[in-house]
Image (cartoon, rainbow, N blue to C red; front, top):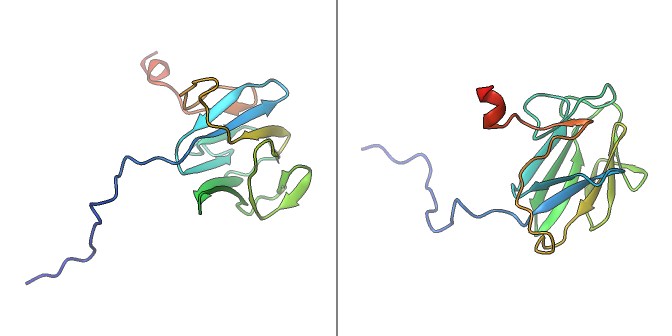
Length: 139
């Protein structure tokens, strides 16, 4: 008789999502909104937010939700990541903090999101590249 390798806790919902995180470009005020509990920012095509710039590492920075807070972690990038002008390896994000990744500045918005009602997952920015939409794939 084979024993199960792992147990799956079916009481937890797989559809639960983390409270949203918005990243707003500075200047420009273009918005990226996420509800995923983890976001990878970098130059690589598989990054959730792709910044195509020579100062950005393939996997530069990771934002993740833990202990009911959003955290930021530099992923060993060559040029480092800054929060409010200071380099860091790991930090807890607060509302209105500013991340610097390469030459890109992203303001952190941890508000409820109801004031604007936006539910977008990605926006294409001049210095950022989001995954292609289904319309782009069809073209």
